[in-house]
Image (cartoon, rainbow, N blue to C red; front, side, top):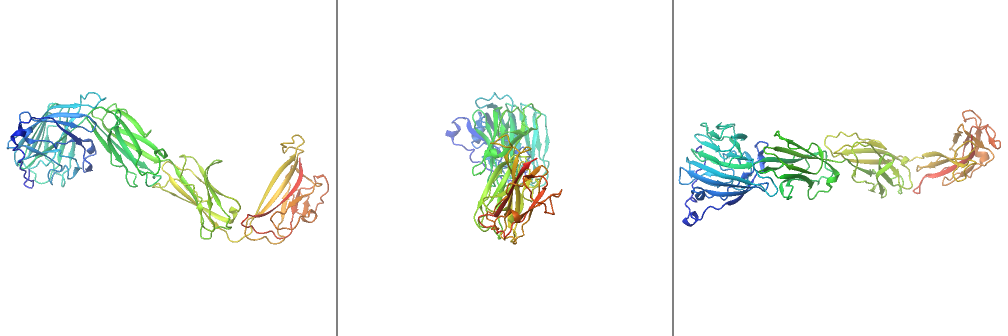
Length: 621
């Protein structure tokens, strides 16, 4: 290796006699993936790097070597014997990554590997040999016996200049799994032996920063490794049977900004969580995956839950799981499956599975009321805003307050059905009339890239889609001072000669029409200016012998006088001139009437509109 690499002197190799004679019990260790990708390839989380923190060079260089027992990420146990020899007095030391400032692993890629995964040469320019034998993987309870696995070896420093690393195996031929980018430039050492039992990577005279190779061999019981350094060298090892990565993608907006999701890979039988991840911030992802490098075929369960601090429930989101496999195995894969918990079963050897939980908020809509500074027409005016689906009111909210102060009148976020049309409207709550206001409707969507069409008038229709989190506001602006008359006409069947309790509008039935007039404005109506012209329907004959009536109500108009206030038409149209005589009985000659009350109709008040009504009776022809 180049002259810039550090020299390393190991005093620990000069062990005390009492320790050297103690024996070689198995040293319990574990494995772990890197915590950050850097420039590593996409499968960076699938390598569970063996932690050699308990490596003892003197023990490893003894005739019996050093026994290790690693608890792997899926609960399996990897046992092996490691024996070291060296052309120098000592062989290696277990070192944290990165082993050197110019090494690719730990600096540019595979960042944050825990423990001390690198077996690092002690002596500059020496040759160190490792024999890793008696490799055995014992699966966790309930998992099948491990008959296939991949043992992984990697250059953990920089092979440049006259340096060389050689990996041997009694298992399957070496496979290049990944390459690790150099921290700068694009130099790599040469390599040879892919597909054979001996893989060699050799420096090509380069100096400075070079990349490295990650290779794997299937189901070996013994692996050998030799590193020859012009400076110092290092190597690291991992084991895997298959790998699975689980990530999260959010479509549209969160219902609440505090909503976060935790996604997990767990052992089905024990429930032990093997890997987990949690979303952060407000982005849609994808988020850093939870990844497991498996050493056995244990059944797995993939789940997601709402993270602590979330406001919404998981049931308020659509949950879909899709998995792909870069291996052409027969492992069943879910595709856009509606679930938040999936029993994956056992992976097959060589599977490299990528799964994504995709969440989209079921459509949520909030409808609220706002009044500008001009406020209410009358202090008693209150409004009920409504979200309707057909004739059904899905949600409503009624205001309180006075002037322009609005309390209530906010439905909050209401969960709706995607692809269903809803109508947004408002009605008065108690006295008052919407005719005294000009209403506008404005909507916003928490989803990036709005596609849902929003109404701008009241009432308005909206058809939300998955991911929509919509807020709509109805703003009512008070109209200028006015007198506004609302006229309605209703009918009531008095008798039909058949049913006393429930008479019908059939030929011969007696019917009473009532015309009601309301002034919803805050100004009175000009004196003697109200004229009601009412052409009769073609199947109606006026009963001239039954007196007409007027309920003056709160109108302030003069008392009713049929003789002076009502005139009649015999025109085909039922209109002017109104000169026909009233006559008596059922007078078929009459086709319409005109009613002209006298006096000044009062303005509306906080108690409600002023009003009066006028009624007359006839027969259904």
